[in-house]
Amino acid sequence: LATTIAFARKIGKVVIVVKDVPGFLINRILLSYMNEAGFLFEEGMDIVRIDKIARDFGMPVGPVELIDEVGIDVGYKVAKILEAHYGPRMRVATILEKVKAKGLLGKKANAGFYIHEGKEKKPNRDIYGLIKSRGNGHITDETALKRMIYIMVNEAARCLEEKVVDSPKTVDIGMIMGTGFPPFKGGLLRYADSVGAAAIVKDLERFQKEADLERFAPSAYLLKLAATNGKFYN
View: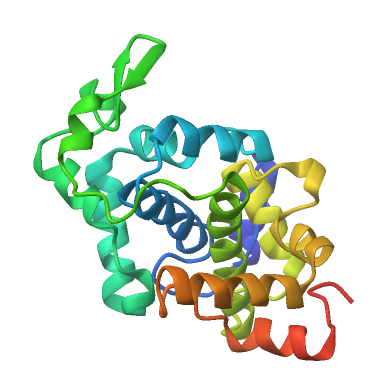
């Protein structure tokens, strides 16, 4: 391990050490964010709006854009592995399977959620016919953002609880360097501390009632922080 870390640092990489679990750290957290974008779309939100909300927060690309970049077949395969291991809370949004089944694999196929033409892209209107919206799209930008970000915070808390990583700092370094999480917010868990665990738990419990009991169930780690007015960083 020490030799591997030394080599990685020698070639200019930032290194974090994680436990060997499905999704490790970054994919496990990031897939929940991308998957939530799928659920928001199924509830009637436009993909351009979803992506803009995330970019306005500071993410380098929106979650739907990221799905196309990764490749819908690849993202779906990883998401199904996580669902098989972690259960109903990682249930894959139906739209991902339907888009994959249509052969719309993302940027590499020039068509996914977006139609890609060189460096330009536009929404692929064909995908809107693949679902019967479960809502009317009347989700506020604030609620959509909280759903995408807080579901990541909750999964990161579980990673700490399960000792997948040794500290909140490791999570934040991984998220900044591995996903482009906005550095000016200090990292995912620094941002969570700025909001407060109690406020995050309150919103997660609201989302449980409005959207999904299992997907938004607050982790034991987060519930403990909320109950003691604690923070990820002491």
